[in-house]
Length: 420
Image 1 (cartoon, one colour):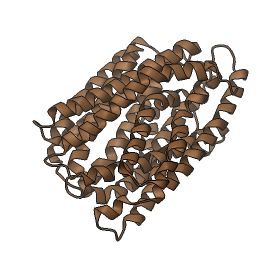
Image 2 (cartoon, one colour; image 1 turned 90 degrees about the vertical axis):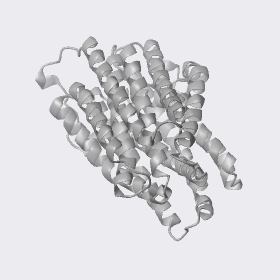
Image 3 (spheres, rainbow, N blue to C red; image 1 turned 30 degrees about the vertical axis):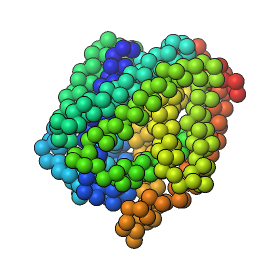
């Protein structure tokens, strides 16, 4: 389990470094105007990327794929460091949308290693192990943001891509060592092995998977609505120089907030309320706080919502969300995670981006672009639907936990779910 935590630490640190360098370059020369197009590109490419990843896993096996993908991404970062330039445009917009798509796949594959190692454990040790892995990921985010901040005055943004590539290569080495220590169990006869869904229709026959998709879509919609307001505020600051310091400071504060929540609240909430209630913390907070944005256009309030969404998502919600896949049949779990996290979420972001693109057309001045009041209404609706779908998931997972056989992965009720 220490290997999984180390791999998540390094992968997250690499992501924050690459994202900081990307943002510092992209928003220097009007990149905010092309941001909706970047979201649309993420939506268009999300399903092909998820399909390509599933194809790689089928061709090379899940364990080899976990090594091939980060090494390939490290090589891409090194190439991009030599050709990147400030501003938007086809090349920069492509890289802007490629970073979250690629790292989303890497995070999914790394967390699936955790499910492979921890699924057979008892509920309490498994919850503690997931909590440690989540804390390691947050520590990596904090380390990446702190490193970028320390280097802000002495390096150009492309240098961060080089450091991110080296960090990602180190993560691949840790994954390789971890997989060697945790060899897979002996496989059952071929006739008894479930090889997973061959079509999306087969995968989504499971009502629980459909609800996972709804929750993933609501989370993605809420995230892009909050994030877009955050980028509008950041672009209005007109960062001088490379802009590394601005984005490094922002990500550093978010990482500190998430790490504080992880250390002080996550374990207590899961132990006392259960996983089902823990999954409600983020959408419930957004549902309660977001209506205030309808009554007030204060940028301080919007910044506070971004802090709450980013901090809770990276701490309480991320660890709980990974465990929400355990009730899915093991043969289908990898496909479900890649399709929902890698495709459904990105396609939802693309739909939101289409509305953003339409709403910004014909409004050239930055001050007008900030006043997009309909975002608050959409955010409230997404948060409420998110809460309802999560409650339905908890009911199904609890019923499956009652029917499971000894040694089979548990569900929400493993951690004292009062509502089960």
